[in-house]
Length: 131
Image 1 (cartoon, rainbow, N blue to C red):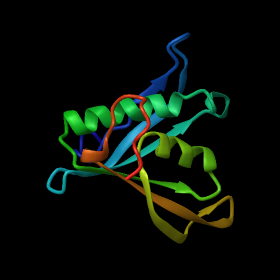
Image 2: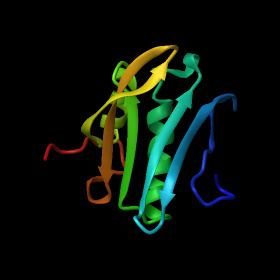
Image 3: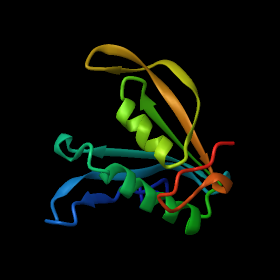
Image 4: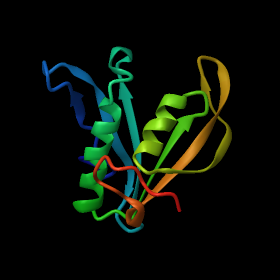
């Protein structure tokens, strides 16, 4: 992705022991539209420790500061409430539902579409004020 100029997928390593626990990505980067899509995938044992939020926050900071993005979007399976919570902690707003957009383990599933606009971005861990 980096070579093609369409995105990046850095590894997420745990600081305490340096263990690889997953990745966080920016894909579908469009410099003309100043937009990209955020994604993350962590080892099951790393869930619930704040690693996804921390990694995504760092990548978003880079995306808004270095790439000068105006919008980042993300999708999550409607059954993955923990992932939706990560996005909402980062200030993403749920913008809609993509009906039956994927098949996971043979089961058709919907996804929620989230968006984060540069002017709404809060780089610290402070909660985003309600609109």
